Length: 124
Image (tube, rainbow, N blue to C red; front, top):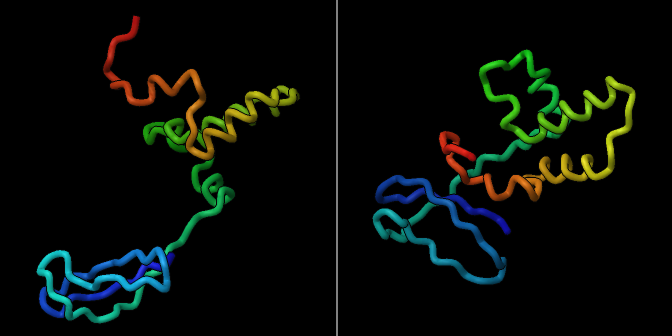
């Protein structure tokens, strides 16, 4: 599914069109002024970091005391894995599964209900 980019010749706005089917026509019209005279633009490219790069850049928690290191679930999992390694113990499989799920953006079952809770809410 390519994304085509155009520049409106009337208002100079840059527009992006996601094309779901290469054989289907799509309406090239400026969403701001409605003009159909658009010129094809050179698209920028995306750069995605590898998991190894994310780990290298985030470093150890002591390097980021005020930046919310543990708000990123990948770092919580790294901490747990490191602690088990330091103690010479094997990480239980159910914990490893939860860490992997968190890396993929899935909250563990007990935390799903509090995912949208206010950080200032009072709990009994």
